[in-house]
Length: 315
Ligand SMILES: [Zn+2]
Figure 1 (spheres, rainbow, N blue to C red):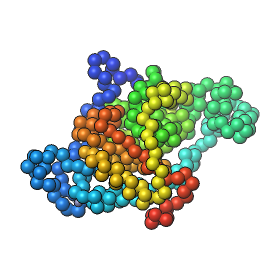
Figure 2 (cartoon, protein in one colour):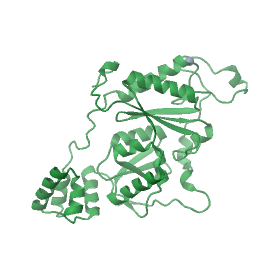
Figure 3 (cartoon, rainbow, N blue to C red):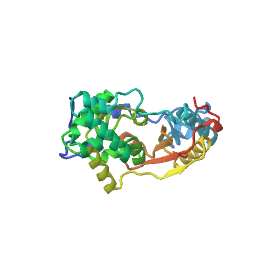
Figure 4 (cartoon, protein in one colour):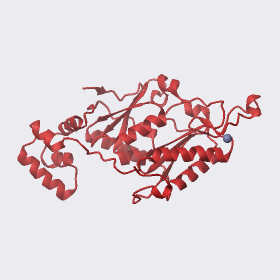
């Protein structure tokens, strides 16, 4: 089983805040380019009077407000295609209790009692078994890893809580997943309950890197959350939007105001996450760097079942 070494060579430079070489290579360089409307870069840039083209969204410069709004609208429509429903974690998985019983960790009788208790308290089955049936936490994690066909990560040390900077805290919290390591070209995410592939997919696109998901013991992840809360880590104000049209509008306006050197938007559940890099250096320093990097969340109301009203079929 892979062992995650979560120590970041602390000698001298703070390695954890640097972008690994492979990531640095793949980081998007601001394009000299052309606007989506065909408009060429302005003469001031060609002549070197102005060095940077702003604002950039998804690697592209936009010459005027209308062009930016068009690109943003296309991006928002793309992100919400298919709607936000139907992202169930539990589809087609062998039940956790059955795996534990097959492995001889619990008896059929214990499973029955635990399920009754789970029903009554609303706790997760794994928690019930650890708390009331003296099942070792490691056994639960191993069974979950089997259930999800995911690696089981033994962490020798507590992960650095600064890793939580890779995304707004709310996004990580709703997915129930935490980053436990970033190496040369991969973000490792750990969960204690199951894999949320929408988060992995969003991070992959936001940071242009691979994301690997695994299962970790509850106590390690809990401690990481507590340290994050103590540090008041990257929680971001959420802008509540009525529909996709409003998200597009507000997102574009925000980019317009920020005039970033790069910005990207990805959806996680009902939240659209915008990250904007205000200076070229910020973009090159990697996902943990906070200076000149801002996050915004544009969120649809929880009760909204479909997006048909905004003109997109929830297929
Ligand atoms: Zn244009």
